[in-house]
Image 1 (cartoon, rainbow, N blue to C red):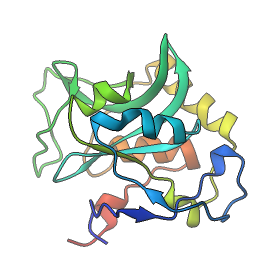
Image 2 (image 1 turned 90 degrees about the horizontal axis):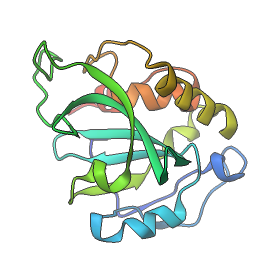
Image 3 (image 1 turned 180 degrees about the vertical axis):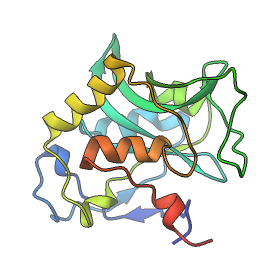
Length: 181
C-alpha cells in the first residue's frame, strides 16, 4: 500500500461510535474537500483519526468534538508556519528551522485544510490494534494538549501520525513510514 493511497470506497471501523471491534461499517466515499466539510463532520465520532491529504504525505489529527469554543475540534501535532502545519519535509526528518518549535494544538477541520484539500476519517488500524475506549482516547489527547507536553518533532520517529496513534491505541506508529514506495 502506498502512503497516500486514497480509496474512493473504504470499509472503516468506527469503535469510537459504539461499534464493536472488527464490526464493519457501511461503505461511503471517504474523500472530502473543504467544500463538503459538513458532510464529514456529520460522520465523525469523538476519537476518530483524521487523515489530511498533503500530496506527498498525510497530516493526521484526532477529532475531539466540541472543545475550546470550536464545534468540531481536531487536536494535531506538528511544526506550524503562519498558523498552518509546515508543508516542507526534508529527508533528514527536520521540517523546520531551529527557531520553529513543534506544538500540539487544536484547530477546526477547515483551518487544517487551509481552504482546499482532502480529509477522511481513517480508523483502519482498528483492524490490527484494539483502540482504547473513546473517553480514554479523548482524555489522553486533551491532556497532551493541556500539558503542552514538550516533545521533539521527528519525521521518522515522532510525527503527527505517531501522535494520533499514541492517543487512540496507546502506542506510536506511522503507517506512512512502514509502507513501501
